[in-house]
Image 1 (cartoon, rainbow, N blue to C red):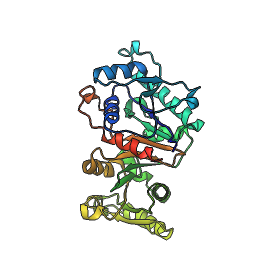
Image 2 (image 1 turned 90 degrees about the horizontal axis):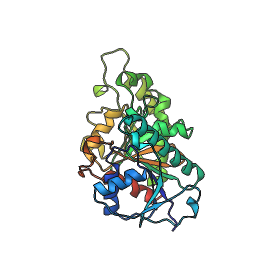
Image 3 (image 1 turned 135 degrees about the horizontal axis):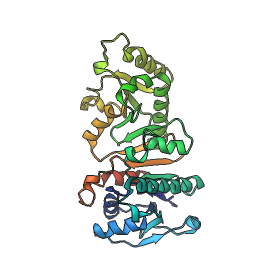
Image 4 (image 1 turned 90 degrees about the vertical axis):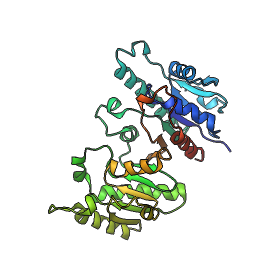
Length: 321
């Protein structure tokens, strides 16, 4: 069987990515060739610092399709950057490096050479500079895709926030039938295509206990009618369910996905329950895009204490595609 390569953007240079990447290569053997997009200088430096030994095979975009690829070496597409001035203009140089890395990855994906992309962690506040809510939106804009969803996937229970990196005071203004419908459709299609089942989706309320002291209770005025309409369309949706009880063991085992109204409403519980045993999948793109479910964690760089499980799970998922 011919396995399509997995394109991996290393992401932020001062992150734990290389540590977890090296650990993943030590722990697992993957069928799909891995192509790393990163700086050769940083890669060599991290290999030396973390005492990781493996041959590096430099690849060029022009002859990429002619290469016989395997994982006996690190297949690297080098991203040059002016790191001699890194200390003086750390954020600027880092952002340019990340941007150029993504550009190369997007070019490869658009060429049809691969349909599988993983990106390492990126400090969103520094890289995106408030132009996008998150990397999900950054990538979807690059491919002119408007309807996307952020699924934090685990075999037992997954979560999806209706709104992503949005300030809380703006959340209620965004919640409406169309937005929720789009997320439910994307989740439903993903599970049918990739998991082979029609998912049961729990939809949380937005207010504590789905109650409000205000005249406008979004849970009864917006969410309840939305769920009824989606049920009539044939989706297995349930709710609105209070967010403080939906993650109880006897409750969460009834569902495949919990759809929350805002980021931390569902991401905080899933990280507490599964820790690194979850991956971030962007639904709605014309290819698979996954990122490990953790940030760059600059404070842990070079300490060799980071857990590689989420990256391993990301590669394993794409290894089957």
